[in-house]
Length: 300
Ligand SMILES: NC(=O)c1ccc[n+]([C@@H]2O[C@H](COP(=O)([O-])OP(=O)(O)OC[C@H]3O[C@@H](n4cnc5c(N)ncnc54)[C@H](OP(=O)(O)O)[C@@H]3O)[C@@H](O)[C@H]2O)c1
Image 1 (tube, protein in one colour):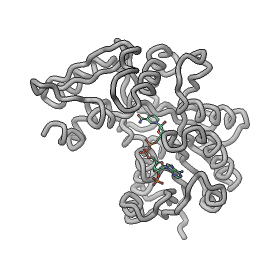
Image 2: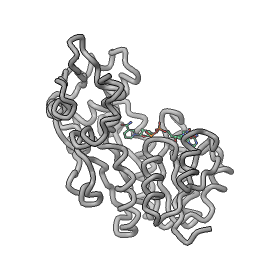
Image 3: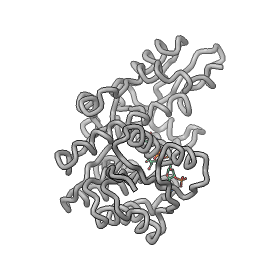
């Protein structure tokens, strides 16, 4: 037992939940109950070593969810669309209801802006829409919820976007023209969520954009060029071309980027506000400078 407030963190072995769990544990001011389907995984063991109470819970199992929320003071809820698919809304709804029924004072919900209605059905972003439906319902019910909208992760650049060219330079291809693209290091989410939990009721009902940078893709290429010391080029392609590229989730990524390109009003991100909550929120360039290991394999 501990006298620190207990925060339930879903997705704790993944990018978002991992960032949140590690920050809360590091702060020493929160106790963390970390949700995973497999407490024997290496990621789960690392959380246990940091002091988390790791619990076996498949979010698709209502009984396991009910048991995992007992006694929590707050929660960070992220659901993984890519494993849950069309069940995402139902699973997230049930988890949020359980967290609130357990008496949590704040639920931080990782959501994404509604896209289907806004695009007149033209863009398919099911990973937005289930989250957005829950977000709207929670706001309408006046629940003690703070919504966080994450931009695309910087971590996607070395892992998935940058391609080495035959001449040793690098390039990334996106269908985004010169429209600014909100982006963030998922590693900076933890401190942001820590600040949101500290703010408590003052932010209930609010939407906080987790964003560290808002530049046109060509400016990101220039930032990576400076940081990596090798030329990085941005290749702009039409949305219709990107959709057909032989890349993982090309269609979904194309629709997602077309949404941020067509609706900059919706996705416009308040970098200053995010930095007000977490002053260490990094730009893409400062993140690349601070995380050379992210690029080590690529540059080898
Ligand atoms: N990639 C981006 O740029 C980006 C930007 C904004 C939002 N998003 C959203 O981020 C979400 C994914 O978050 P992430 O990037 O942190 O994921 P991730 O790194 O791929 O990790 C997925 C997490 O979900 C957990 N999980 C999956 N199914 C589960 C289930 N049935 N029960 C319990 N836990 C389950 C996994 O835990 P175990 O395997 O340990 O059980 C793992 O911790 C997606 O819904 C996506 O829409 C992504």
